Image (cartoon, rainbow, N blue to C red):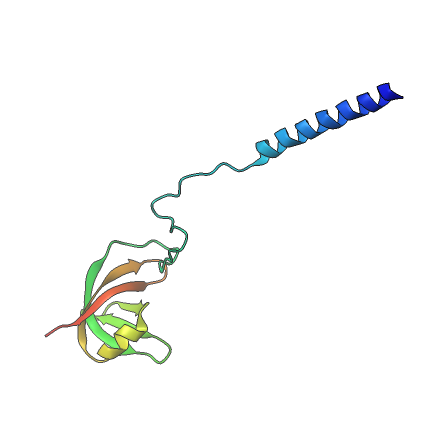
Amino acid sequence: MIKNLIHGSVLVVILALASVGSLYAQEPQQTQPSPDTPQAGQSSRQPTGQVQRAKEYTGTIVDEGNSVRLKDSAGNANYKLDDEKMAKAYVGKQVRVTGKLDTSTNIIQVQSISGVQ
């Protein structure tokens, strides 16, 4: 009887050790985030498309009811602006918008807007 109790106790200890080992094997590896990945607490306004480097776009700000857009000076491009609140102050005016264009959505991520004389 004592022999069976000892065998049972040894079996329990072996199973417990095996379980601990398998738990460590299942623990995910921690990786360093890539420079493009926002850190915890940071937000990213970037859509998931192809985003270019910041550059200047010139044209007229127009309010199309459901969105504020930049119609470029040549008249062949029309861009949605992600910061409509800032852009509304320039509706109907010639402006220079500095920002990054997301080519998949045709949205400029506005960094600044200034009037053009």
